[in-house]
Image 1: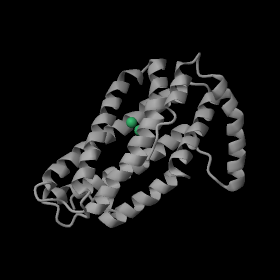
Image 2 (image 1 turned 90 degrees about the horizontal axis):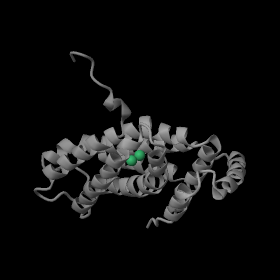
Image 3 (image 1 turned 30 degrees about the vertical axis):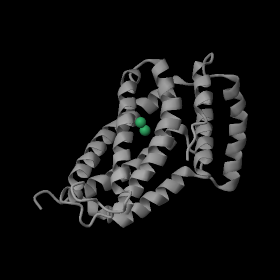
Image 4 (image 1 turned 90 degrees about the vertical axis):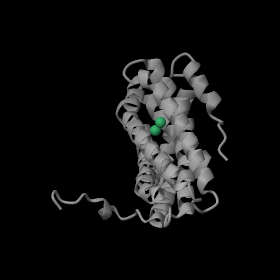
Length: 242
Ligand SMILES: [Fe+2]
Ligand SMILES: [Fe+2]
């Protein structure tokens, strides 16, 4: 169960007198120490935006699975591994919605981008509405698959929900990658950016008890295999005219 322990810290940071707060600066020394430790232990040191974007990569792989199984669901759901679809939606909920969206974007990224003004600020409300709609759809998918089978009559509605979710989230994540994350990086200083990257890593470790990205990647690969969508070569487009 994920607790939203960072809300007060994040809002304190944003509401404070600029981003160079005492907490932020004191965190820099800790961050440098952590990075040295990471180098010694062989752990990767990823920047905040790299971290956010590779999280999108895991989420996109779930979207690919959703799109691939949607036609089977529309045809009634025979042959769809409902338990694996449940696991896919559950991974989207824990890694995508509770961690990536709520703990990083909503508590840290969006307030900074909104406060900075500029190109990213006007789309924040839409991104928040899409987070909310996504959570509704994920809750529906979880509810309809929790029994480990697709009930008669649910397949078509599930298919439409997954395709609508995929359409929304592709546009959503693409805007974040190209507008929001660059605006976030540009609107804070280099030190604050580095320190927030370390803070994100700390949140990730706390939430998942280790490297959340590695754990999510292993889970999505397992789900892909179970749903029969793990072969990358199967996605190569046919030749023109074939
Ligand atoms: Fe988002
Ligand atoms: Fe995102």
